[in-house]
Length: 591
Image 1 (spheres, rainbow, N blue to C red):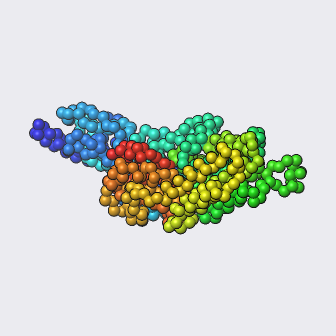
Image 2: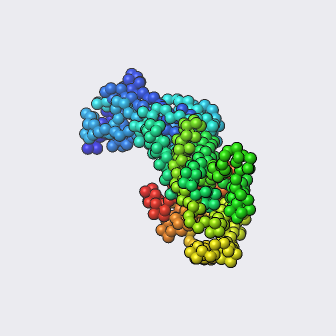
Image 3: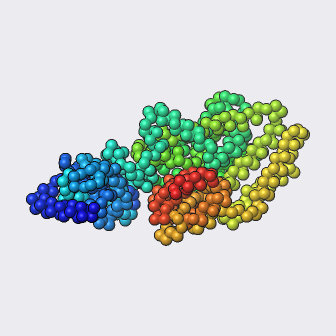
């Protein structure tokens, strides 16, 4: 067997010499290089596709030939400081039996596609760059093989600034290449090149069907924790401001949702087109103080400090008081900011889709319908809350109910004030308020004490909120993942199996729910010990440090959890709240 192989090698050498001498190797293989995007950004990734055409009657060895003396086909990126070859996907070879070999060979012939994943250096400035792609190969026919050689192709890559829209090209070619990007930055947003299911679903649907899908997605947002504050606010506001009429309550509820939709839509469109963190308005102290002020002023009306209505001259012209309608719309405008941090895979997908479209009007329509879905349940909640006023035996009893609603609104005002208070005592503010509220209701609120049923309710309600307040300030030994503060060099020296980075903000309710329910789970804590774990604070999203983080990791909203491998490459991205079991399932799929 060895003698036969030696003879074959000698024959090949002789044939190589003859063919090379007479120039018969020329133009046996041709390549054409294609890109997946018309432009790219620094710090992003893109695909290349090499269309390889081998002359009829010839073949080239696959990337992994069976015999050692055969030269593999390899794609090489000529050394370039701006571009790095990260991954190559070679086509599936075919096994053929040739006269010069006793066993089948692994070869490529005819036309085939080779895919490549290219990383753009973060320091690459906008401009046009030449990228040289080289294919090394050995051509053979049924009789013998030629000398190894190579063929090169040069393409021009346009690196754009981050405000320039990027378009996918040659999609019919790249859909046939099994090569997924890790993260491709498109208009400052992050999307999976393997196709985002939300964008894919919207793209494949008609406008009406797409809007219906978005509306249902908005309804589903009510299952996320960041909309929870809307419940007590809606109860407190409508319970005290309505007149009991179903028609009027319905109109107020619809105007409340309309106001919410307008603000939510504007935030969504601005986020999509500018790259800002979705819901980041709640980190702005001025915005927080405005929300707190509105809730505080509304609460005062519940205690009879002023009456919520338009001036008498305007009321006379209108024929009836419309203050409640205007107030409901204005309240909805404010609550759109509160609802904005409702982030999750669906909202991330919609943000990405709108950003790719680069159409503000289309984006506004999509987010408007999303917000309508989000707000629909609050129409019914508004009607239910307002109906309290139409129950029998109003008067003094209803005044006591209004006072309770006023306390709820005051509590919500303090809740939104917490992120800008010093952390040393911010955790005691709400418990202290709840204790004061319980004492007030038990000993100072005398309204409707003659109504036995309501008096019992008031006592029970006071005891419950006092118990919650006491429980919340009792120190507890809560176990959690051993987080370290994220720093610039955190990913430079990875000591574990990879890195977990939790991007959070103080104003983000799902972030707190992740800490309380997911990262406190024993199994999650045990698993996290295999990784380097960091927390990245995105609270002050307008600061240069946070802006740099957002750009580096393409953070659209919080919470966002990134899982990186030991080489610092992103393996998974989690947006929104997930349970401990869901988190464990995601990690297990990466192994």
